[in-house]
Amino acid sequence: MPHANYLIGRQPILDRNEQVVAYELLFRTAAAHNTATIADATQATASVIINALSGFGLERILGNHRGFINMELDLLLSDSLGILPWDRVVLELLESLVITPKLVERCRVLKQEGFQLALDDHEYDPAYEELYGIVDIVKIDLLQTPPSRLAGMVEKFRPYPVKLLAEKVETRDEYRLCLDLGFEYFQGFYFAKPSVMEKKRFDESGSTLLKLMDLLMKDAELEMIEQAFRASPGLTYKLLLLVNSVSLGLRGKIQNIRHAVALLGRQQIKRWVQLALFVSDAHSGPENPLVEFAAVRAAFMEQLAYRHSGLKDGKDAGEQAFLTGILSVLGSIYDISIDEILANLSLSEAVKEALTNRGGALGQLLQLSEQLENLDARFDSDWLEEMGLSQEYILAAQVKAYGWRDGML
Image 1 (cartoon, rainbow, N blue to C red):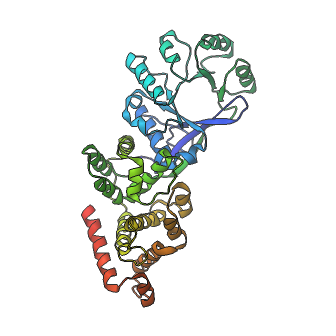
Image 2 (image 1 turned 45 degrees about the vertical axis):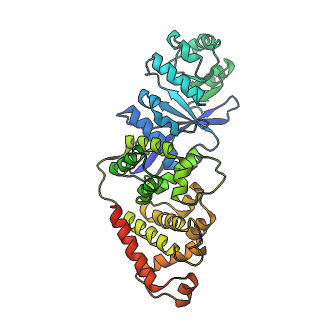
Image 3 (image 1 turned 90 degrees about the vertical axis):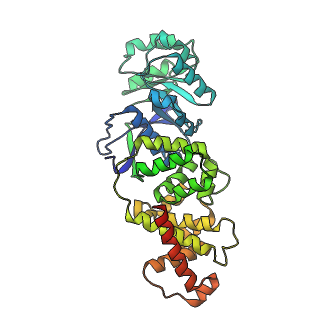
């Protein structure tokens, strides 16, 4: 069974001025002991990518820096890598990779696409000569290459356009030696041990992800893909985080689920699902009852938005109402605060106002939903009239909301 929370290790990488310029992102399975139990390297890497993109969000985990991510052969060759923003990550080729023409060509393509590449735990080897002309960074492990051999190793790399990174730097003397030899980057316990970031996990069953993948493979209409997300609050939140991670610097705010799907694009969603399938628990138990509760609230608010006097003329009113309903319940399902939701997502001001202050027209619908859920049907007639709603329409909207959820199940 997967860990209950998202876990990711993070160790800083510093430049010659001892300023943090990047972090290596590390697979972790036990936050208390800062350890990694790796049964499958591909799964471990996929877990790091999924956790970084749609668990924490790249902005939160990296800030303005790059992230180094270890790469096994399966993922290195996979089209799924296209989900990663090339300007935010460095693909770190593990020392276990066997040099083949296929591997060299793949690295050349990735470099042309804009990715930076690094060789991990490396010692000079003529078999890597082609790669030395492609990769950007060579990481030299000071435990494998003792100080007495460093100068000779550095000389062998001088003909190539690579920067050297000293890893496992544990003393001031080791740092000074590497600095004098011209190393550009440094990483190790002398500067900082890896820290573990932890966040409550939003797991989705393998069947949900497979259904979404099936729709994508069949080139289904955008509406059908949207429906798959709408049926799952956890997937909705991860979708929005993903949009923020791979589309940094968005000019506009996310208006609704369809808008997020359109911004991300069919191909990027497919890549994300492929990675998520690597780490999903295909045998997860029944859905949390609160998930059904969230879906019903969202569908109910959507129905009300079609009649609300301040919303009915808006093109995306129903969609924004649905999104507001989903996000309003996340705190109960996943123990996440509204403040954290707002900090991680680029939401429209109308949705923000509804979630924080129950303000605006969307806030009115949220209040009305909460009142009904508390079995309080005593509505102020003037308030309903102001919204353009009647008791009869509210009842009909409830019936439709439950019918929609049953149909999705």
